[in-house]
Image 1: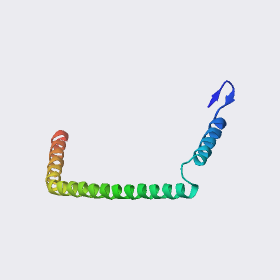
Image 2: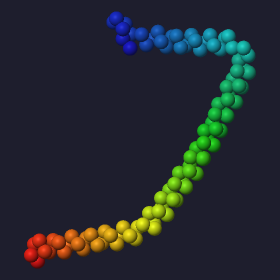
Image 3: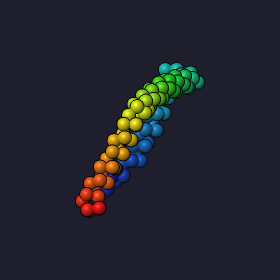
Image 4: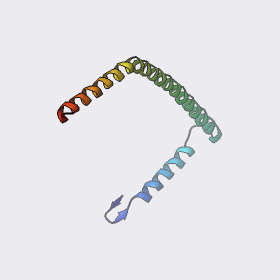
Length: 99
């Protein structure tokens, strides 16, 4: 971030630091209460994320299971089709080469 030959980034960092200090000094509750509140809120956030990750994991496992079942039932037909295509190719190759 350079404007008119000056770097503005250090001013930005100083502004963030001053804002954080002012916020803590002017907070309506004492420091220890604020820290307890922040700790409780962050714990709730972690719990929520953990819960959502568990739900996502369960959904993903369900999708994988359904996909495996689908592919399992169609795997034999794909193998047969692939084998038939290989045979047709070999026959076509023999006819083309005159062998």
